[in-house]
Length: 201
Image 1 (tube, helix red, strand yellow):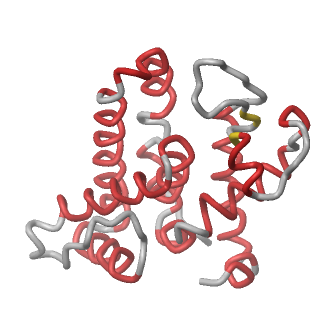
Image 2: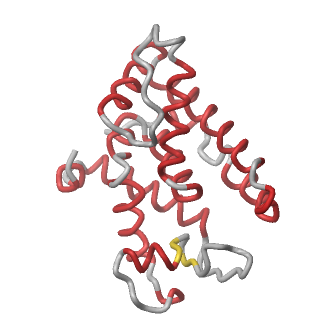
Image 3: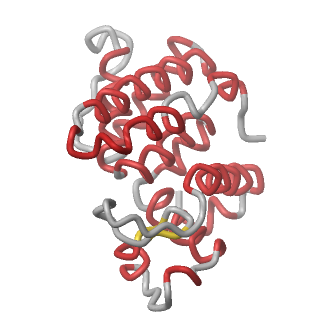
């Protein structure tokens, strides 16, 4: 689905903006923690990511609108999460939020691993290659899970397994243990299962 095409779908566009707004709530404003390897961040955007997107100003002056464009470009469109958002806004939110926090390749791999774990050995739908790239095969397999378990239950199962993998990821980062309590508190379970009932109108 091309950028212009999804933006013409008012329901889908609203869902994307809602997801980005939720990320802003999680990330907060300007931070310059000397212990954070990412350096300066504002609205959750690191200085390196901002520079990659052509922003040359002071990080304190990065606007939420500029950050929103970066999120949509790099954390929604580039990893092909728009397709998943159209199928399940809640799973899409989990992918975007985890991608912002841990990288989109990692969040995509968690999604693919969850799908394979729920396929009953490929009986219910084809297993996918866990490569961190959301393509036709991954999307087709998620549709297969929805067909087998129902739209709401498929969403709930995937979010539970993505949360489990994300929590394990945090537990395996002893060099960043000062951040673990905050990550677990704010990033695990932050997409309520009740949101699985939501759909694009």
